[in-house]
Amino acid sequence: MKGIAYLQTKLDKKRTRVLLRYRYYEQLEGYQDLGSLISASKAQEYNSVLGWCAHGVDFLADRLNFTGFDNDVLNIMDLYKQNNPDIIFDSAILGALIGSCDFIYISAGEDGQPRMQVIDGANATGIIDPITNMLQEGYAVLERDPDTDRVLVDAYFVPGSTTVYWRSTPQQPAHSQVFGNVSPYPLLVPIIYRPDAKRVFGHSRISRSCMNLMNKARAAIARSDITAEYYSFPQRYVLGLAQDTEFDKTKASVSSFLDLRKDEDGQYPQVGQFPQNSMQPYMDQIKTYAQAFAGEMGMTVDDLGFASSAPTSPDVVRSAHESLSKTARKAQRTFGSGFLNAGYLARIVADNYPYQRQAIAETIPTWEPAFDMSASQISGIGDAAVKLNQAVPGYITPDNLKKLTGMDGSAQNAQTEV
Image 1 (cartoon, helix red, strand yellow):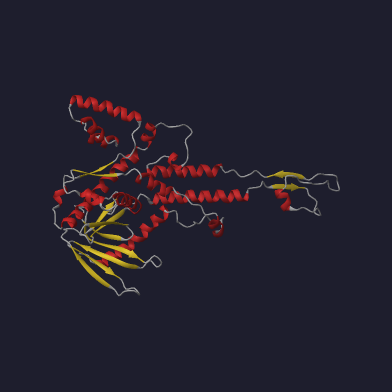
Image 2: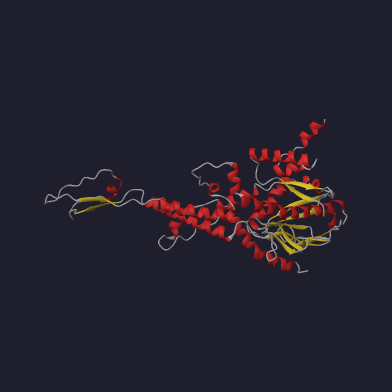
């Protein structure tokens, strides 16, 4: 065991990185330096905000809809239904995509039933078991002072017990309490996005490349705003104006008519206009960054608001999002494993019995398809299902059909049987 002090230090190092991703997701990142030609005050005045990182995260999160478990021998889904599953699943998925990892904290309520709470990656950490993807020990901050960010309540998790610490406040002295359990694992379960052998707590969807590209696009927008401000009116010039001529530059800059008289030699001054600055180079630059950002996120520039000239069919859109579809399936596997682990520990708390982990070996998390099926695809699947069932009777069932298309055929099947 590393101990609570080690985990507290580990969380402090990781917290800065996670909070940075949240600032980009919430579009709270401050102004940036626009170079030596633009002052800091001017850069702050024309600071731009882009929601690309938030859109890139939501674009995937909205397609990850957890539906339950197949072969749910421990009735895990019943425990989730008692703990607002719509909020738990969506909150854990969104937080994991932003910060690479979220945690589900499990405790026993007053009635003995398990309570499940999502804790973001900036407030929890642990030592992970690479075999089971569960923690060997964990630490979480359960409550912070909203004004000072000071820790008020935190907890240390080990197999068989959870120790909760209440820090000293004007209302109460510091104290702690140990809550025992029969679980073979700590009651803190990681929900991880894209883990690997080096970074066992995964990777954030808001990568360094995404943040860099969005910063460049923000800078291009700010420069275009500054340019538009300075070149709102065309700049004119006058050659050959007598030195003693009274000339109001302010009126000349906003007036559509200039009254210039002949000089003593009977010559007219030469009036001209500088070419007006074009916004097109800035738009091209922003679109280039959008294309690079979309490539990083598995999206298209249409998804970022740059509409293509020709309309696209659903099949073409689905083909363009093929990389995102693979990313979604990969995320479903890792998130499903985390939800299964959390449900397994919740069942142990509910029954107060240390089930072996092999009891859930055949339980499979299920998800809705990441993309809605088009009419042509549904028709093609229907024809294929008929042919398959003719060749192998009963091969395509309502459950298989739901996995392929997201359409639940159980109700129609029940009506047919009646």
